Length: 236
Ligand SMILES: [Zn+2]
Image (tube, rainbow, N blue to C red; front, side):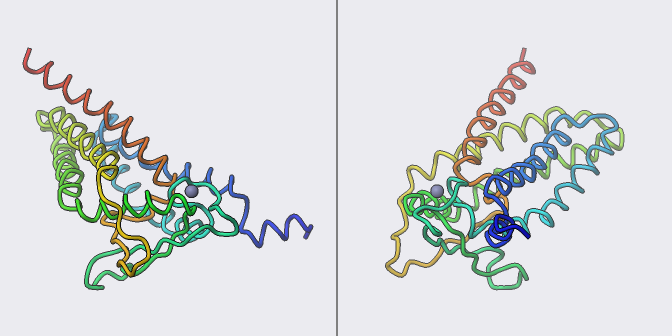
């Protein structure tokens, strides 16, 4: 083994490699959304493939999170600064009360100057978890129900369910992406308890939160426009 190879093995591969792998794992999410929103024929196959990818994704994304959570900044997706490892940001993950086997504390690293936005974002997610969860999961359940109905031959609910999904999810992700800016930062240090991430935490490690929020803003606004155009087209 060469010296360079040894160094790479010790640091666990190059940062670029981990960033590219994170992007590849992130692409599962738009693929699932494509299968649900565009539902290529036959609809039943698109639905089954989307659900299988959605359920299976965590088995790749969780080990990825474990591998990168002390290597990349959770906020900017780069090497945590100052070297060697920036600052730690403890987070609570999983369900309350410890009934969930995956519940516990998770330590991420962030750049010193990215600790505040990352902590503020997670604290906002926790505080706004009920409307945010409702804004994602209610339209998702309706869309899945409409896809099942369409697969069984009843298609009349499908287009409205897609538009409702895009509109409500578009609004919700924009609330998350802009809302945290208005939220007050939790006191750093000073014994404040770590915030609890109310969504599967591994999704925030794939691109870093800052990049993810730009995807939320841009795709969210696009989807809101699509939903409004659907409503206008119906009322004509
Ligand atoms: Zn950073």
